[in-house]
Image (tube, rainbow, N blue to C red; front, side, top):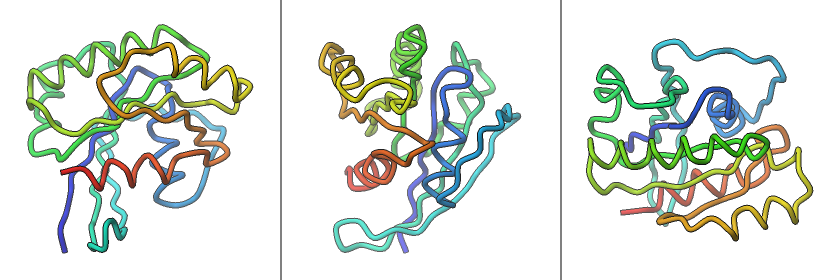
Length: 160
């Protein structure tokens, strides 16, 4: 079975851990838990008729990629870049993390997630995505409601 390492990148408290929990366990918790170190989960899926195991590396929220974090990126297939629609500054932080990640690993598949879309009307989430000029595929997600979570992870899994 083919394995793909997928990293979760984004600022603090954007919902990276909640997205992984929703995808892997179909669970959501309102409790905020700071990720310390790296937490690895895995999920088996079928993408394009192939059995895949996704190794999901939930990396602590960062405002910049420190040297110690760079080692987490080695060998990854791709990454989900997560921002919080209720905190616009996390979009800029995410895009900076994207530039820094590319400097470490080069061009690998990336998906941009505008998370917590359940906290804004759907048309406002769509409007934010429409106004962003992104060099990658994007999804408006909600870990709480499960909106677009499966679609985002599966899209990334099908790349390359």
